[in-house]
Length: 259
Image 1: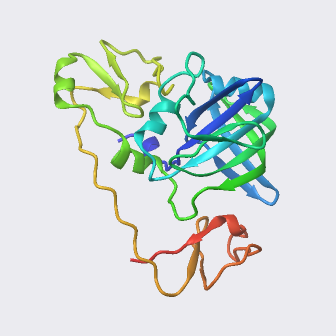
Image 2: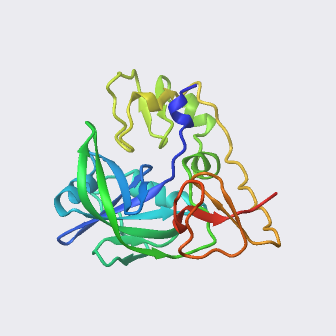
């Protein structure tokens, strides 16, 4: 078991705009670092076209993908290159205040971001940002986690495909199949992950996508839970609430659903 795969991530569309060009890519690295002042970070592979655009302009927008999203948004923004293709062709989208183009189908909402500094992380750059605007499309939807994507959305290779490929390796992140022997320095041409993401296709366990779980019914008494420390607030919630345990603000609270 690779313990790295047990770290929890969300999935997001990171959008960029430079001159007349729009682009976006899938990331799993949006993080809130502080609540006062609000500081968010996004970490992007240097091979991505989106990375170069953000580095030049200092602006970006990050859309939070919903559990209701289909594989199309992951495939469209995460499994092809913006250097050669228009990822927004045929995609329903709106223009943010900072100029970035935001997909709307299967998206909960988005943050507009202004880069204040950056950290060189070798293969990636971490952009440290201040949110300049935020828009909510759907308050009731749950954000898409990497685990949920793997279980309920990502397609599985057919047994026939596995048997006909011979010696081959599959990227467990995006499903790309590499034919022939594999080297330690391989980089997936689709999602840019390294050797650790590849496993032999022959031994890859084929699993059908699981049925999506039903949302738990809400209790009659209104409650909210702090997603940072687990503190439960009873009753209606105000915009200026501060968690008495971890001191985070309203953005850390979500409705608490009990089984």
